[in-house]
Image 1: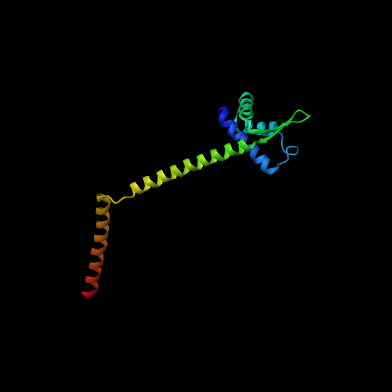
Image 2: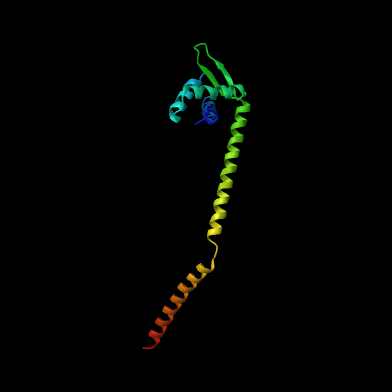
Amino acid sequence: MNEEEFAEKLLEALKAEALREPNLLNCKSTEEIGEELMQRFGVDLETGQKAFNFLAINGLLKGNRMPDGSGHFQPSPKGFAALEERQRENRSALNHATEMEKALDRANNKWTLERAIKWLGIIAGIAALAWQIVRWIFSK
């Protein structure tokens, strides 16, 4: 996972924490959230720091350092907008993929001559069997 991918995950986690606890003083520290994510995704400290710096430099975070040295940051309005845009892109890509799958299914389910002949043979076989049963019933 590169810095940008991890930065997106970190921003999403900070958003979730901001929605859970909007007060910067009471929310989990950014270090705590970052460490959990780094362990979950197997990211090293350097990549985590680069991801955080990327978010901070681009104005996607708001917050500050506490007297105890811990940082409490949340997505800035620009950060929330970036996440919404990314989610919109993901939904659009998902919708496009779903539409492509539907189109492929429709193409695969079209009636071909071979398929029509198979069904015609099945129907003709059932009709012939029914005709033989009717003849047998009325022959007695």
